[in-house]
Image (cartoon, rainbow, N blue to C red; front, side):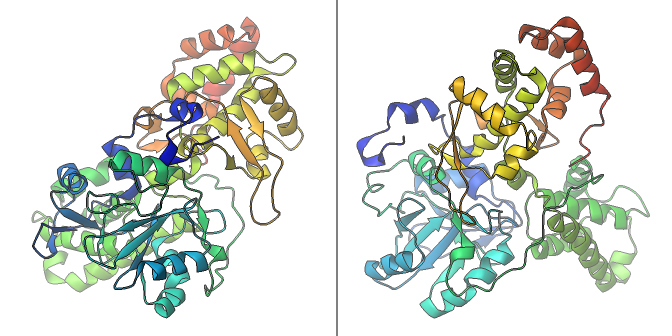
Length: 467
């Protein structure tokens, strides 16, 4: 069980905690494109029309300046910005929204009577877009005279800088941004569907996405950096740049604006239409952006980091351990148990800072089958690897899992073109040659013929059909 931050970390927390890096901070809070705000001591906010660099983020965290960033398409955090109000007002707002120190952090600002309440938003268990976040909170924010961030067109000060002390009693002693980030990651998510005065948003059932494949974003990156490379390539290149920006979680309006500025600046003389018919080009960019964002959003396909933080990720040593554990369970086939445990460990990685986390039964069935998931859970319980709690509330939260695992660092996650790989078979194909995985399977206790057949099935199946 997790320890109170003011009394130190328990043995369990020490075991689970891996060093947090600037990459972890960036992947949680930073939107680099298309510009950012900066404020030096004694000066006012100014806009810098270029991507936000790691060096500027370090300057913010060390207190040399304040840096403000824009929203991602799927923000991983939300901030209630409360200005010119006493502390009691901020606490009242928190109370109305059922927020406390288990699911939010209250921080101060260099301005008097100004506060930020930071939380981890979900909507019906899924990550909300920035538009959904703003729409849900709009009426309440107007009534209360507060603002909701992040926003698409106005920057918000990045969290956990030197001049942003934590005000909750249990977090007040935290000084280093790494410690603040660690305890932020341990917070429970807040489901916005429970917030007062929000308009109900219609949701659609999950769809099995068959045959939709994500393109490589390398071409989009090259075009974004170097511009058009030949004649008759504007339409295609615009699409690739928009796709590259979507993969980087840039909101659609900002992606349109950025792509339009890019084509005007970097057509390199290969497009006459940009000069002759700029509005026609802009309209075309809007149609292309709408196609990209609508298609993927409607199918529950997320930009890279949202995909990784929602669905999870895994490292190569985890895969080896998974096969070892699956092979040590008597009476069960190695591959089905390994696939089930793979799903659990992968899902637990971005949630590893919490002692336990809810997992809907549908996911357990997805990783195995309706008939087998209970058997696999019992077997993993006997191995002291996975424990499932009994408490749940129908329609509100699912039974929690506790995973006894030695986690690696997120930088070592197995990825394909920037995205965590979804299935055990696809992961094996990314990191191993057939002879290597055959050796691992035999080491896990599979007989020679069974290991050979398993390898054949893995490498003959089609890769990434569900991306």
